[in-house]
Length: 229
Image (cartoon, rainbow, N blue to C red; front, side, top):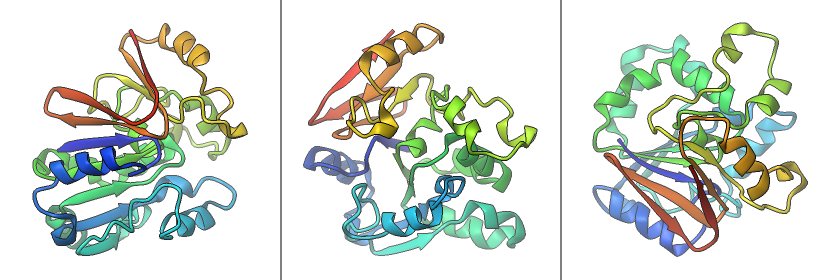
């Protein structure tokens, strides 16, 4: 599976070009599935999901001109015939994974069985936004704030400091974003945190993405980013 891990979606021409190069055919011929499960733990999370689907979204993913666009709701999958939703995933050219709560998203990726399909998705492109990007790495930099809004359920918060580990590094997004909710996403704070883990840490702003194909990681940026070892 190819990964395009963004902070804020397809936010500039360079990131869009990278996406077009990774896809097996033009966007207008590609089938996309959209995953927004990570938004639900927050107050107003459902409204956030609807806003993310708008063409005016600040994190554009769904309005790029896909041949088809479907919603893959991870919390529903355990109650659906497995062969039905699995066929949809295998048929998709791209998975568009929105942000939110890393821990909740990771839990439902595992609980639903989606993660079990990853080895079969060699030609699929995974596009992450914010938490949808962090979850694919080895470490969860948002674990403390994640737990604050989750139910007191040991199964959901188990190994909260870890991501899925498909990428052996850590990732901070929204670097130096002026919004108050990202007040700790400064280079100074990230560098301090990076010294506590055994992997390198990428810090990327909203105009930057990581393009991952095989073992190669390429930074695509029209903004600012840092690498902490």
